[in-house]
Each structure stands twice: as structure tokens, then as C-alpha cells.
Length: 150
Image (cartoon, rainbow, N blue to C red; front, top):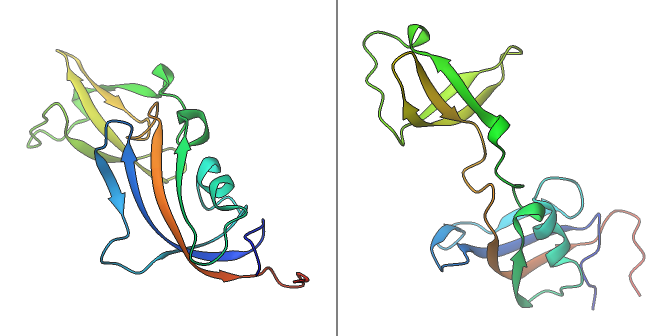
């Protein structure tokens, strides 16, 4: 029976939780998650965690923040001038906004503080700095093209 290796295409069902048990994502009731292992489509710890599985295997993968969405970084907070906020927009701490960078790419930020002249926005990934736990089940494995299966 073939085991997952880098370059293979896989489908997994998963439930992602924080270390306190809070669920942040799950494939329950949806199609399984499909990706190519080692192609950079997944966080590094998830990619590494499915290597060696065979179809039907279930596994709990504990992923430290550094192998997930990275550590929370202060330099990813943005003091945004209130003069650039539309006059009719009501801002609240915890509100999620979408901004465009100089190249026109969109990214999400969260309002963390409202000061007199600026709004402090956090552009870190919402799961940055958090250790993650994934319960996964491998439901399909398609070997990489040209892979020899013994």
C-alpha cells in the first residue's frame, strides 16, 4: 500500500483546533481538502504531518506556531491615519477590514485600537502565534506523476 510522500496529491478530512480545544476550521459536512504535499499550498506543519499516511489512516498533528502561520509580529501592526478612513465608516475594535497594498493586492487586517489621530490595524494572520492541532483522516492518495509504487 502506498504512503504519502512529497509531490503526491491527497484529500483529507480535518478538524483544526487551538490547544484549548476551540475549533477554528473543519471539513465536516464539506468535500475533503485536496492539495499536493510539499507544494507550498499548506502550512509547513500540515504538509509534514500527512507524510507517511496511507488511505484510511487517522492522525492528530500538533503544529507549533512557527510551522503554522508564524509568530505574531509587532511590525505587522499598522498605524493608519484616521483622515484616510471614509467619513461615513464607523470603526470598532475587533472589526475586520480589507486593505490594498502598493501593488494592489488585498489583505485582511483587524482594528485593534482607535486613537485620536490613527487607527491601529493588525495585519498578522488571525492564527499567528498560536500552536494548532489538526485531527486528519487521509481519504484519497494519488501518487505523484512518475512515482514508482512498490
